[in-house]
Amino acid sequence: MKASVAQAIGPFVEQLLGEDLPIGIHCWDGSRIGPPSAEATIVLNSANALRRILYSPNELGFGRAYVSGDIDIRGNIFSALEVRERLVGAHRDLRLDRATRAALIRAARATGALGLPLRRPSEEARLSGKLHSHRRDRAAIAHHYNVSNAFYRLVLGPSMTYSCAVFTVPTATLEEAQTSKHDLVARKLGLEPGMRVLDVGCGWGGFLVHAASMYGVSGVGITLSEPQADVAEKRIAEAGLAGQVEIRVQDYRDVSDGPFEAISSIGMFEHVGLARLNDYFANLYGLLSPKGRLLNHAISRPPGPPGFNKKSFVSRYVFPDGELHEVGSVVSAMQTHGFEVRDVESLREHYALTLRAWVANLEDNFEEAVALVGQPRARIWRLYMAGSAVNFEDGGINVHQVLGVKPGLGGSSGVPSTRREFSTPLR
Image (cartoon, rainbow, N blue to C red):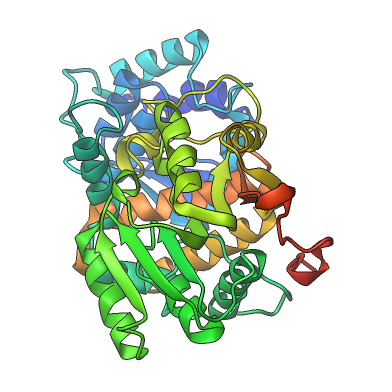
């Protein structure tokens, strides 16, 4: 009697996850592995799931199988992602070892999964040209942000703010927390009426609307995404700020109309890249007036060699060419280019809460999301945001706000002597 798929893949699953399986696995022939009452179930819809993992025995293979629909994740996606802790090594990358790959090959042979490599999902990024050139950076931004403004509104909520919120109280809503984040940035920058502010990577304009309406500043927002710029301009007009705030589709390297008394960079720094780090801080320093402040808000990585994993799911499907930097190297780079760093704050737990709220928004409106961007892309965002939440929770990645000032005459800074005036810690 022919063995079921569950029996055929059982040794591979045990080699991969151990004997006490915390999730359920349902196979395409109806056979099952794991506890029937598990909070999450991995569904193998066809033998192609094994074939994709066989040819990319790392997180990219699993990701391709999920994006293409060869694998489904039913139930609590966060419970499903808990098994990742059993898979990652010291480098926090999912890589199958030799013994596990051998078990996978035997499972693939037994289930008819062997064959030629499958076509990659069309949603996988395929960029060309010199890394972090103007043209390639624009293409990378388009891949991620030019998806659908309506889709982002569905996921991010009315604020359309695509960065870590700040939950000053546990009961805060996502919208309240995003307002708190905007206000925290504004206070760290010391905004006052009449100041001129540059927002690098302004997104859909949320911070500039807050800064102009609440603090009376004028501003310039730059983005490489035309759909973002269109929405930002409409939001600014609706807020009655059209003569006060300007939105441009422009690269930060091309801004030449300083000085500005404050510069915010919120969730854009991840796109700069190690090769352009010096250009980035040198350019922004040159655009600031004396005693002007830069608030650099960015995801950061643990200590270790620089670089990025080109075979990661996030690199291929979410943030092509994205690079994270260790916060100490960021502080050093800022000071090398003349900034005096005055404050460094981690918001790691806040980003986990933010991402869980975004995942909830997506899952509550998944059918509408699929109608807007298609099943594969909706799956990409579900997996990437849930996985990122787990990474922030366990310390695999962090997010830091680094405040720097361009010293004035005699080294004067104008920065408050204590953090009390702008700090809003998580309670």
